Length: 151
Image (cartoon, rainbow, N blue to C red; front, side, top):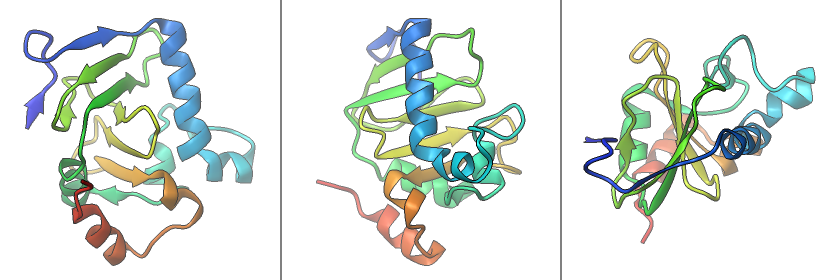
């Protein structure tokens, strides 16, 4: 697994405002079912609870890791649940694993997301696709789809 280390990969730190805008964009995609049902964007303290409470479909644990590592990457955005911490943009040909917990990794188009939680192994990590938000696949078909690496 590639670790996000400033000396190894080209990283651009985002402003707090850019990070906040990315968090809002992530919520508009992945927390949409929860917001429609309740009028709020997240459950409790963490946005990733939309996956742990099954508001939005996601692969979990090893299936999530396998799906994530099958993704073709160029530019990845990484944000955390800590609103005081800026996110960053990473240029990498391979998926990266952030050093911090409760980190959300996704491409600029938000086509998919990988979320690393502080509960790793119990709750998370989670991998989801924007297309699964409104039309969740069966878990078996999602695993098959996740294994196909786009060209």
